[in-house]
Image (cartoon, rainbow, N blue to C red; front, side, top):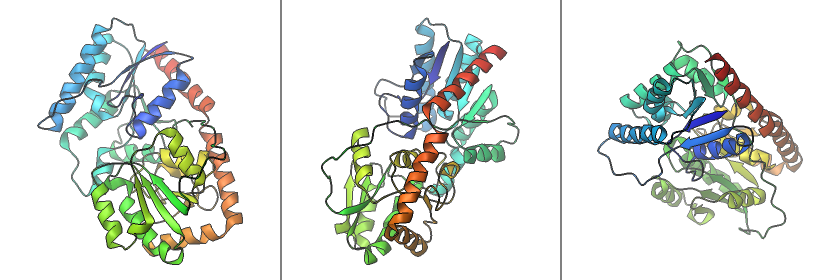
Length: 358
């Protein structure tokens, strides 16, 4: 079976959770099927608006696919910005279309207190409307789409597969103090500003703790300024984006990994942390609710309530026996739900069903 995958992010040069998800998924599917990835490869020009950017990339995608002279059995498009190319190629090649929606425009913009972009809403609706199979990574996303697009009845939940990266052995400590760790894009929906506020309270009763934040994005300067305003500048360390081995090393040596996202359709970072057997704290809603259950497999806190969240983190940090139990249960949970064998089988069955019905 030959699958054409469309994505705005290249899986071999991931910049966000979408790229990491694709990279893993493709590596597990490749032994069973043939996958051709179509993603922007050349350096793109600057654009006057998002409509021109999406249009240009989609035109390039269509040209690239039609010039490669390959026969495809189906298309698998990832996220709404690939909708125009997916729509055209589905008709032109007369093959079925599967689509994965990784997040909703309305959900992202609500967190930023901005209006959804009208064109992104159009491409989002188009992809949901034309897909023969609609895939999401969590029950949270399934409920979100069902609410926003009630006409779409059949939605399949297939989580992102684990990395199965080996645990780091006795590596040299990167930071010699105890620390909390978080990583991701420095954008509003990831909630790092709230984490800094929570940590400023926690740090008063735990001055031995540091906070390590790794990533990059438009809010880096404001986070550094906030740390200074909260008088925790000396206890907060900022790192750029880390490679996979560095992330695993930082996770293996931290006291707790904390991911305070305001909008999280799946929770790939939390999944990675729990896979490594690390005590993990997340908000009380979002995609990770499928696998991060408070006081059982993870710690769930309301990070908008800084004092309550700080107290909750402090209480679990001082209860080592409970923390060990939660860590082990968390690892078992994600290994059971997100093992690559299970995820691979789910996709192969979906692709086969889609191909048979075409």
